Image (cartoon, rainbow, N blue to C red; front, side):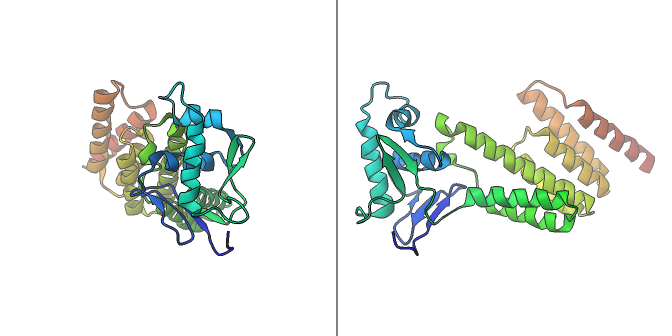
Length: 262
């Protein structure tokens, strides 16, 4: 592989995987299993995965499928990524004794790792006390996540754990960023971040807590109370539960403050 060819991996939608100037694996690429196979091996980078494990995880509906199906899909994937077989062998997907692995020694970039690295930097900077820089890093991390993670594979069991992990990381990033904005007195920013979190997950109660707090501190007590009732209605209709005690306590504090203000 020429040294200038960088493998670009974007798993936040829209999905985009591209080596150098070759046509990308994206929403228009018709071989869904080939895309799934690449993503699976990338998520398991550092490990050799047997063809039988790949068959079981990526073709669960085919109980007695021929393992040759894996090899055929590998060939399709390699051709899509690299074209004709390079003189020095395939570079992206490696093979050893019937097992396959993503070549982590390549020159490659990944939006998933960029997001996680930036989020770690934001947290480390915050913990060191530099809240201004931490706010910038949190904003940068959130901006990297252009869209949902692997939405094309959201119903596939093999992707479920990582989809859930990435969802939770993003929710944490939004809430931690909102708390920092509140501490800096930037209530409008905190409100926007909290609303983004609620749009992402309407059942994430702690996001409502941050929204209520930001609205309250911004002098918008009625709006803060309204968000509590909205949360209570959603939880009752969808989960048949009440808000947590600490959420209700915040609501009561805002309600008392409203009464005093009046």
